[in-house]
Structure formats: structure tokens, C-alpha cells
Image 1 (spheres, rainbow, N blue to C red):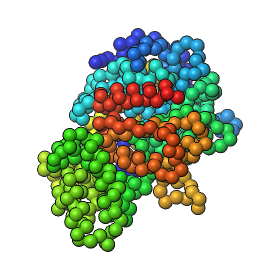
Image 2 (cartoon, helix red, strand yellow; image 1 turned 45 degrees about the vertical axis):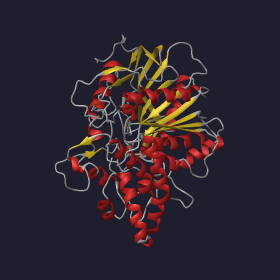
Image 3 (cartoon, rainbow, N blue to C red; image 1 turned 90 degrees about the horizontal axis):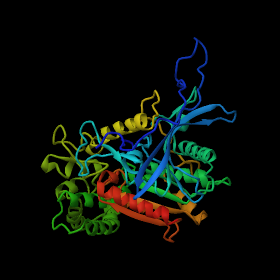
Image 4 (cartoon, rainbow, N blue to C red; image 1 turned 135 degrees about the vertical axis):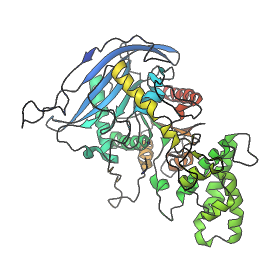
Length: 506
């Protein structure tokens, strides 16, 4: 987490904006020298569209624009930009609304918006090749969820076009709890504006967006002014950050990373006597990781030479890395070393967010790759698509640079604890409490086998602790891609169908 994330625009007939307030920006020069800069009204654009989603023709209204968060005196503090897609016609009280965001922290919602669930999506190579240069295909997205739910994509402060206003310090929104409070406030304001307080509601995110989802459910349901939620969608989960703590003596990350290493070694044909299916090999790796491997690591210097000799060949089989290298690493293979070592004999590195991707470094020496080929392999397409769809398709074109990722800094990770602080972040208990106190709440979890940013075994560990009900309200789904499983066409269809089934089953 420290090192962080054909077509012309539309075959649909787009009308002009039904409403657009062309006001000067909050950061425009003052009318006269020395005058305070006035904060203009929020800028909003409304357009009408239609498309086929889940096999159904849906006419929908798109609302792109700003919602102001205000202080107790009604003074604007921050502009949250969102993109709402609402089915046209009389309001159905049983129609759900789903609020979605990405992670980072510091990422806009562009990835889920333009890659998975929005009415348009950008096409990148499905087989883990680089996205190249524009023009990128931006096409109708039949896998959008608009047939079963209205959709609201939210960009937190410091991401997308969202920003603090006037003299407000944006850092006041940059932290696990600060951010969650602002997102919960936005949701309440949106429900006010659209009259949807009694509608079924889902929230969800990807990557740090799953951490945000846990913190937001705490803000929505953790007091007596509840906003009750029907479902939480966790895509590529990171909830318990102890697994990512790069501290000598912390063995948990080595254990939870191992099944992802096994999946990657299987994919790149680095496994001797390779099993026929990925799932079979991953099941073996899970059992080895939580059993003999965890026991060996926890013994530390008490591990005998005989035990070490027995572990090494098994560890080599599941990681695809030589016994000599693993022995030199004291049986502890860090992710960076794995990315560099697995395919060193081929002169290639592998991706972090999606280990199907490969890259070529400046040289073949060293312990870590120059960059993540699974990120630079897609980022150009998504940035172009978001700007094109927003500014041309939705007629929302603010005089602000869209920040896809990296728009925040100095994130406040502290969420408190029984002694007023915590040594690491674990947001998973927020979800456990919500499940215990809301009998209608369900949780959907989707993980990519080739994801090293948020390994699937780590997600399983996080949501399998005491305090979580064992009544089947947590659903698990797996995909043959990485962190953004929807970049693979087959997995986008599966993801869409899995979520459609989950939402309908409420």
C-alpha cells in the first residue's frame, strides 16, 4: 500500500445536457484585487441515454457533477463529484441503488466506472498485453448493472474532479475515518435529493475501496441515525493491513501471499508436474501455507535442519523459485523478490496488480522490478476514457484536471482502538459488527487469483476471524485474472453475472 495503484464515443444517441450550470470555478481569480474568492454553485450536467444491459433495454438519466459538503452554517467546504445513472420512469420503491468507489487511497472511481459497471467501458487487451496508445475503444457496456440497480460512482476529495473549497484544508478529508465520514455524508445528501431513503442500498469498492467500505458501513450503521444497508460489495479486498506490514518478524504476509505465488507459478508454467486445474493447485497451496509452512516460520531459529530440508522442496514447488534462492531468503520470499525472480531466466518480470502481465527491466539483476507492468499496461486507456466520456458523452467538462490516482498524501491510517490507537489498520471488525447488528446485511467478496496487491488468501483470513457470523451471509467468488479482474473479458462477464445474482437475491 505504501508504494502505490470500436468505437467512437457512443452508438447511443446522446441529447445535450438537460441542465448545466456554467459558473466560474472556485479557484477562479477574484473579481477584484484583495477580494475573497466567491464559491460558485455546484456544477451539474444531466443527460438522457439508453442502452442494453443484462439483456434489457434501459432508458436512463445520467447526472454528472458536484455535491457540496457544508459546515453547520451552510458554507461549502468541499465538492464531491459523482456520476449517477438512474433508470427513467416512475420511481420503483423496490429498485436498489448502489454506491461505488475505488481505492488508493487517492484513486478516483474511474476503474470500476469505465472498466466494469458503467454504461460505457474502455476496452484493453484481455490477455494481459499493454494497452498501447490512443485511440482506445470506448464501447457500450452490456455488463453494466443498470438492469438491476441504479448506480452512483463517487470520487472522494482529492480524486477525480473532487476537491476542497475556499480555504478548507483537503487533508481534513484524508484519512480512514475522515474519508469515510465525508462519503457517508455524501450518501445521506444523495438520498435526500433523490428521495431514496427507503430503497434497497448497496455500497462497494475495490482495493482500498474495500477498506473504505468497511469504514463507511461503520459511519452509516454505527450510530442511532442508521442508514441501513442491504449489501457490501468487496472487490479485491484489503481489510487487515497486518499482512502487508513490512516489518522483520511479521510472518503473516509470507503465509497469506503463498497461494498467490502458487497460482502465478502455475499460470507461467513454473510448476513441475503441473496439476490440470489452477483451483486444485491453489487448494494444495492453501493447506501447505496454513499448515507446514506457517509452523516452520513461527518456529524461527528453533526450526531444525531436518525440518528446513523438508520444507524447501515443497516451498520451491509452490513458488516456482529455486531451493537455493529460497534458502538464501530464509524461506521468506517477499513479493518484490518474487516479481523479479520467477521469470528471471526468461528476462522478464511479472506484475503486482496482475501477475499475468510481464515486463522487461533495464537489466536482469536486482531484487525488484523497475515498475508494475500490470499498471502501466492499462492506465493510459482508463484516463483517456474517463475524460472522453465525462467531457463529451456526459457534457460535464470542469476546468480541473481529472486525477485518476495519486491525488492525496499523508493519509491518516489511525482508526483508534481500546487504548486510543492501533499499531496497524484492521477495518474488518467494522463489517463483523455490521453483520451481527443487521440481519438483512450480506457481503459479496470477489478476488482474482493473480492479484498481489490484495491476495485472495489474505482476504479469506481477514473475514474468517471470530466476530463474523457463520450463517452464509458472506459469499466468495474467484476469477482467473488479477486485482482488476474485469480487464479480462471472460471475468468481466462472470463478475457482472455474479453481482447481478447477488443484488437480485436480496
